[in-house]
Amino acid sequence: MKVAGLIGGVAWPSTLGYYKLLNEGVQRELGGLHSARCVIVSLDFACIHAAMAAGRPADARAQMETAARQARAAGAELIAILANTGHFAADEVQAAAGVPLVHVARETGDAVAAEQPGLRRLGVLATSFALDAPFFGRLLGEGAGFELVLPDAAQRRTLDAAIFGPLARGEASRDEGLMVSTLCNALVARGAEGVVLGCSELSYARPWLRCRAPVFDATEIHARAIVREMLRA
Image (cartoon, one colour):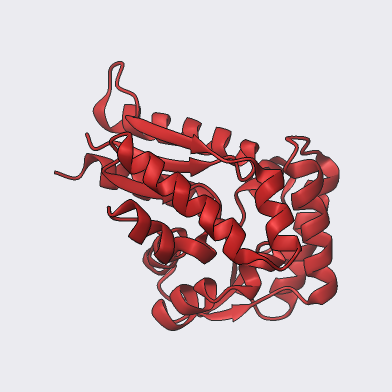
């Protein structure tokens, strides 16, 4: 089993969810008492968020590049960013680590296409930082061939308030679930044939989620892909 270098802490509930999924995936594949071999470099999300909010993405990117080098020095043989938003720096993180990176948007596009081959219009719920970055459009749109249906400005503000508020603090509740349901169905009303939960914290709203179209959890898809690459000969 390869050692996965995991850049986490952005925010901590995301890392907690990934750690559970990775270990469950390894145990499911190998059985017995097997668990995931991994190195977690956990960042202080307050510092990352402050840099992004102040329009200094280079500062946030530098912190993630340092984390990637630390993970590689600790023995990582592949790298993964445990947050959709953090993938704005995916290319730089992979270069800093010097090992393959498992990209959440690429894996999500492949998974949706395989599961729903006739689906063409794909809604995406994510932070404003992630939606403003080019990676969703490049890998889900141009790369996977989906027409993306994205939240409008007011809906992005609503999402950001929940993600960077209660969800990032590990305080998911029915209120967040209802909000995510409303936004999912708003995208469906605009023609989305499926909706991607493109933020790891949104996974915690799923117990209350009700959507009129298929929902694809990018975190679960990404975790499966990380396990696949860890176990690849």
